Length: 105
Image 1 (tube, rainbow, N blue to C red):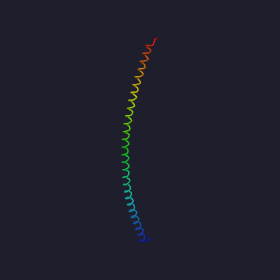
Image 2 (cartoon, rainbow, N blue to C red):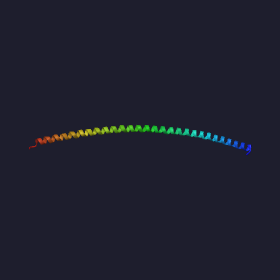
Image 3 (cartoon, rainbow, N blue to C red):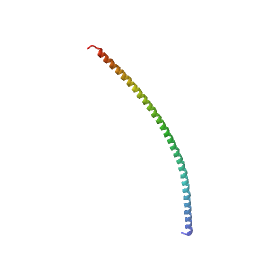
């Protein structure tokens, strides 16, 4: 091979290298732009999930308060019913005792 051919091959190789470097730089810039876009979208999703989580927490807190209030009401009704039932049973016991005491043996 002649020096001229070597020079031409060297020049072509150098041009190919510059072209690869340009394409690599373009690809790197494109990747950076895509990554920035993804980061902002991920941030939006994260913020949405956090806000939704706060709403879910608030709803759960309200539900727990409602249930606690309803359980309190049920306990009060059971206590009242138990007291009323106890009063009625004692009244019947007293009545039975009076009837037994009054009955001739």
